[in-house]
Image (cartoon, rainbow over all chains, first blue to last red; front, side, top):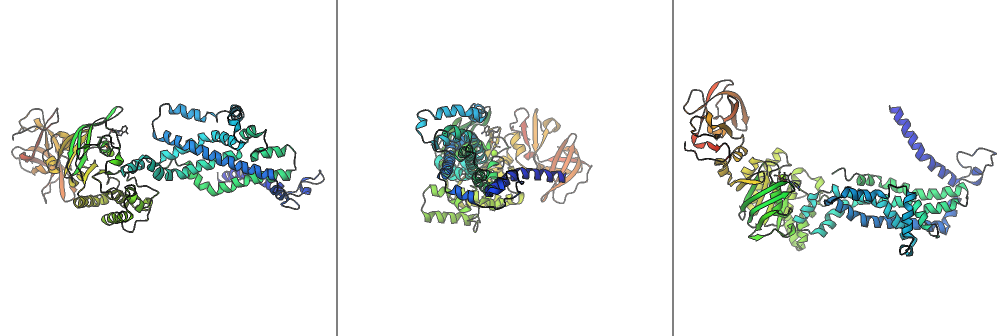
Length: 273
Length: 340
Ligand SMILES: Nc1ncnc2c1ncn2[C@@H]1O[C@H](COP(=O)(O)OP(=O)(O)O)[C@@H](O)[C@H]1O
Ligand SMILES: [Mg+2]
């Protein structure tokens, strides 16, 4: 049993680490290590590892632009989905609403279709007036809000349900009105959980390709995943494309490690009192 | 300080009638307890006074002012919840000062009042702690302090001691009593523990199924319960109930006779107006010994005199103190006059 478990863990680790290793390896490779022409086998590690690709990337304005776009789109998606999702979740958690099951189903429905079919009506809507007048950052942000909202609402609903109603009533009894209770009691208690929802939304947006592509394929300004595709269509060298994907991955990896504990707390906030 | 009056107060949740047209007057500075089994509507009644539930019908008056439409934050009441409901992200000090801040008290007065409560409840040195860093008893006191610091007209306490262990509960019981003597606020207290109700209250109201069965001082209720439920609920060990026809000296049809364990004495010889039985085990409850006696299919508890010892399986006679027996109508459960 124990050895089986060990093998399974190794297998999982391999699948996680191998792509990362390949990306790192290629991004550091010199030309001879990847263009072998079949004369010798590709080395396990580059002959002369170097940072040339990263230097090349760092001076590219379009790459930095895509990075910034991704960042803004992510932040917008976080802001929109919290702004819309948290109050909705609060209402769902606290008040008896007739037909709530149907409501929650519709909320999830965008995610029931494959993205590629859901994107058509969404793009149709957002690319026609008056939405089309908005800058692409906002359009993609809105689309990502649509995708993230069900999760935000579900997570936040759990968060609010985990806050005992007694606390609110106690605040009222002590003289606090609705607004003060929301600000001083509910918000601070919900914050870690809502933080988890925010992180989740940001990563969803950071990774999202289909909607970003359909909404930005005509313009120059786009997000990192779509930018990556544009670069790919020029068939660049392995080392350049690896450097780009590594740079896209790194914030996600670092951040996940940093907030792992925090996120776990938030996601299970509904389960434990 | 204030009077509270409940007038035909009722609360319905869908199908359940939690509180069923109760009438109650609580005097200024009085310690009144709502006591009854779990689910009888005590908490709901308290929440109606607090304004946390909307009344279905009837009125709540605080100092002769109908408060039905006044939200809880404007009633100048305080409530301690069974769960204590301490704000987990705030220190003891911030918890205590929460209500004072809203009332826009000066910094000086705030400090002074918080200090008063810390002293009063022995919480000094805990100011900076978070609720999770306190013991159960300390949390309970913070919850109480947070309510007291506002000097409310009425203090509502919902089973505030039920989450404490037995020893601490007893200590807090005396502390509460002492506290009430000192601050003289009107207190409405809710508990399912009759002993707590008996020791703490000036008066108590016994509730069952949403109704108030009897209101009176602990002594009145103990000595003259007006119905069979109250008779059995108040007192420990509980009152014995024997069908009237088995007691030939109670000349009344359709009667249920209640006799408290201390109103029975054990005789080893046949006595007049007594009940024949067989002794069973003796149980010690604190300083008192209780003997259980078999009278055919019924087990009767009797308080023994100090030093009295009765072996098991002896034939004995139980002699009731006829002045202290309670007679109830079997079908209505109400107390009936009985001339011994
Ligand atoms: N919010 C509510 N919704 C529906 N029924 C309730 C609600 N609160 C209390 N009840 C019902 O009302 C009755 C009295 O409850 P409660 O006042 O909590 O009793 P107690 O405090 O005496 O144990 C119970 O039958 C309970 O199930
Ligand atoms: Mg209760």
